[in-house]
Amino acid sequence: MTDIPMRTTPDRIRHAILFEIFGLILMIGGATLLTGFDVHALGVIGIVSSVVATLWNYAYNWMFDRAMLRLRGSTLKTHPIRALHAVLFEAGLLVILLPFVAWMLDVSLWQAFLFDAAIAAFYVCYGYAFNWAYDRVFPPPEARARGLA
Image (cartoon, rainbow, N blue to C red):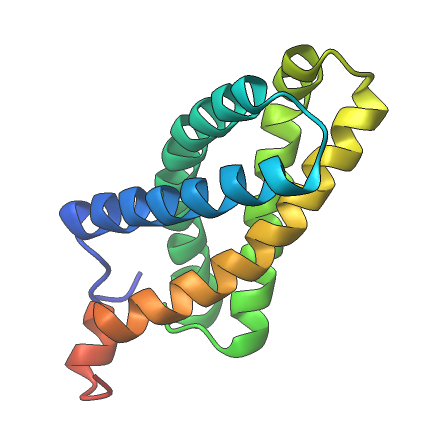
């Protein structure tokens, strides 16, 4: 393993919390406007999903960075890697949350999958944009070490 600096635990926690706060605001507001589902159920789904996603975000980003270091020798993400990062994150989260969403909305797993897929599509775009912006506002240690930030 190389000695390339990775983000610190406090930085990862800040990232996860900011990601979920902004995402929750956008998701609940948008889903309320676009679906006929009960706003209370959407709120519960949003909050539970946010907590689960925050934990998943921390673990997933740590694993993704470790994999990037092992496979590429760097944690710096190109645009295609950012897209892959966002898609894989949402796919994992969708699998984790599907039974809960079906139960909360009192719908079939298929209907919950369609709802979750729409939310995941939103979060793939949001995740890409948020992570790009986060890296600009809070550059990763490797970018600072290389003088790229």
